[in-house]
Length: 201
Image (tube, rainbow, N blue to C red):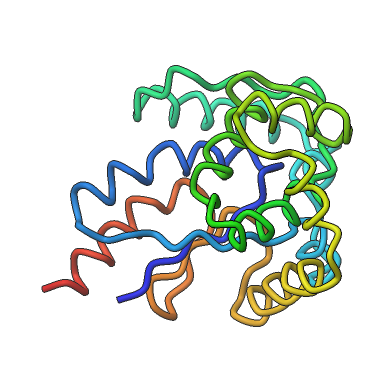
């Protein structure tokens, strides 16, 4: 069984999912495969828009979404989340950096640290100087990572990840796949766990 988490650092719901995934892994024995995608690319390919855009003008919709987020945070005891005041953040450099981090063998730590800089101690993470400082603070060779992120093969790989994800049914982030079954949004994590448990019997 292959369990995938298709994510973009710019999604607060992706961070909240990331905070819960280790507990699911511990309970089920499954290991989530993290797949970096570019959410802006997904929106372009699917003609979708962010919730802030698509819910604008719909009375009560955004406040309800915020209420559901607070319920999720309380349900899972997440005590280290802060909404990023620079939201929405252009994450192109960060997501290319994720592919570069895979190649350099530091992907898992990169994911943890960039999510931290986005949603635990929020920074303006579409500013190259801020990104470099954050990566250095986290113990990375920022210059090496950021240089590799500009390599054409890295750019192509992120674009390919994004296109493949959309072809499989993705229209936003976070998106999960349990083998070929798709689940969208942090609120589907319970269903993802149930599917893992059913498939492991």
